[in-house]
Length: 624
Image (cartoon, rainbow, N blue to C red; front, top):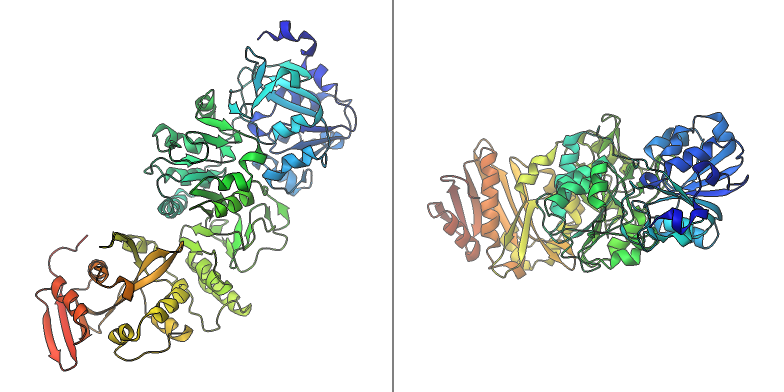
């Protein structure tokens, strides 16, 4: 469409357009990489403008002016999110921050809680029907322009065309400024320790099944986490922001959206931030479906996606599960953004859950991001009740449905090893945990990842094997009390009645994951993992042999569980220099004797009245 023929009265220069702004006006500016740079520069250059309130979700161009006293005397910035470029100005009190959930910001415009006089936006040239596209910035831009008295649009041929809520007819625009310029390109910092990001990505990737739908935030860590998913299949996307981190997964057909039940075959997003390569990929690509923030971030809409997994980052998290993501103490650092919207939406999603990912330390390892309590002034962006999983480079803390005691142990386990003992001592002073609680190991236990396995049982169900951790105390206790008296007697050789905190602590204290190892078998029941079997070995003094013992829940006996766990225990024992197992079995325990004889047909067996002694030497290569 030729604008000169269709609506010549709307065509103005940037200077003529911003002259429509009056002293005292409330001005909305489109978001981030979609902001109209030419209009912003013209507005700031107009020295007749005073006492102007500017509302913007994410601001880049104005960062060039926030050190200018004249600018600050004439304009007041109110931002819903603090960009990296605006952080220093925020710390110095030169801009104002409005904490708000992204899903709710458009309502503030619609309800006139935040009144708007002028909207400055950027659009594509109109198509033959007169429709322009908001391109990479739909988010709150749609609501901002719809509720402004005057809409001024920079028409930029370099703006990409997107489908969805992005269509704007020229009849909705009061003034048009044609100006060709490259879009703002914005990539996250790359200075983060890649090794840490890769370890976090390793843990996250284990939690994500093929066919899941993802939400992931902006930043270097989220981008690197995405790269850990390169071997997944048919992932979907429903997220606030589309970034360059998605490109490798898109190009290798990892992201297909075929398995999505809500808007299948479409990547649902609200804005796009990244490089020209990303913009070129998104341009006129029907795979992408851009909707406004009140839709994309609505927890009820989010929940409509089965297996929706939300992955977001944080600045720090305390031992009880409170998360801060928008401030460093009293200093406002970023914003609430979409985190809470997606945490709550994923919690309601069938098969969905949320992950908070963060490195365990900051300032080159000098301070812990897992803290006894949030720093003074830190904002609680996410409450204890909203957090599901927290992931650092040291593992995964599962918090949903857990008590404070359990949360402390889960969080301490994923803290940096040098801070774990201190965190446990702090927790004791606050009476979060027992005064005799044993702290998690100070070792870097990443090597235990190699000891995690999954197996199909004879009944078709799956069992997950992994080393026991201090946070498994309550699960271990529940397992013990689920056992029948006969099963307990076969394991302990007496009618043990009590397996409380003290008893569990004593058993956990002996586990060093090398000479003394305990594996637990887990099965998903009712949406959470429950212990259904335990296998242990303990090295005998001055020997390369270790005594082995098993206990399997009655409902899972006869399914080959003990044999599976025996194979894994042997593999671990071999790696730690052991050459064989010993075992004492009650003579009446025929099932356990059968397991040992079948696995080690050349074992030495000694009959000792009511008990049978087995000596089982390893032979050949370890089993896979």
